[in-house]
Image (cartoon, rainbow, N blue to C red; front, side, top):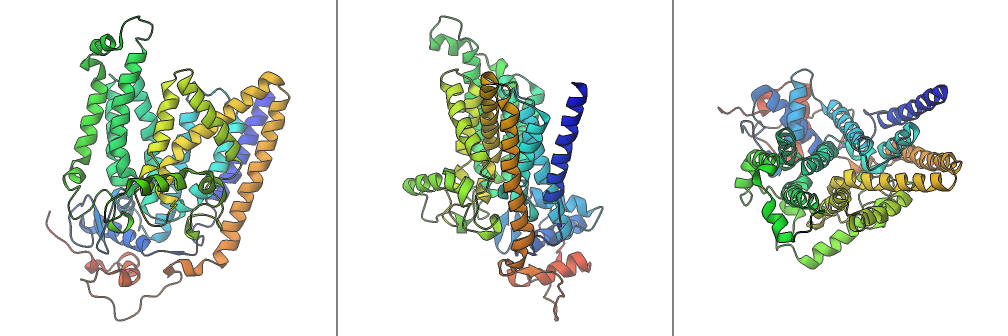
Length: 472
């Protein structure tokens, strides 16, 4: 038995190692280029690391100005921190976002592994599930671009799990501090994470109260009396989390209706106002099976040749997991699954309030952590069902799952890393090798038309004249 477990663990590590090698393969050449936004991010990171200001001379800004647009700063500050030790060029920026995406997936799996509600934790099952996630379009493709959405999974996943831990222990000050920081970061990670700040505050407060009331379920007293028995001191961790989150988000909250447009950019939000019918239509287009598993969104740079954002091996797991999560919530009154379902639905809202590029897979990266938990619930319940019927069916089903998922992952890798680089040249504005033309742009030029030249002169040549310096 001991040798069998060792062999199974070794096989799991080999399987995960092959998937990891495929995930990180050829970062310099795949994809074959970059959009305007990537060199802009690296330029501002170099300016911050050298002068403490962005390219406009704003000292340690909480929102990055670029092309008269405004971007969340968290990823750019990470690039700037790395630049202190090694020149953060486009290649290194791509490697950093790939690492962040990989760690984000590990955090999801760690949360799944540590959950007492999920029983099936065979090493090969966990390794194959993680491998198929890494090699899906939703993870493999966007994390090869040094842009803000590359930090979504690694910020949303720990926040989701920390919030639930705080809901279970609402008086824990340590959990309150960690949860507050994770919620506050939502205002600085990506435009799609900003609405999660407000929804998560409501979820933490609401589910903490529901959990406290559920603890009194054995007492035959009215709901009103149960509410009266609640004490504020029992929620001091929740209070600390809200305070920390609000303090961190204060700069963006104060300017919510100002010119820097913290909630969303003008070109992605309807300037005439958000109509409820449009939001509901967009919501459905982002949550249906078509985008998840069959066609993805309409932008070739976001996936592999108009395939779904997730491999189809996840489809039966998602359907079974969704039914089981609803059953656990309403029949067994398990608030954890209610929280996951509500979080999943809320995470679609950032994409639903936009009006361009619908459906848009990058703006729905926020739903990846709860969606993966739902999928693993389906895998867990299927394995338990087969184990109760006939234990011999479990390894057979596991083998079928691995073969199906491996074939899809292999096809994704082949298309994205072998075929697509030959046909996607027209989708990018910057390609290697590149030589800046003469004459060089003026130091006061901040336009998109010269961003490639300015990036190379700052990052590759060390001409920091393009980084305006202002006193703090």
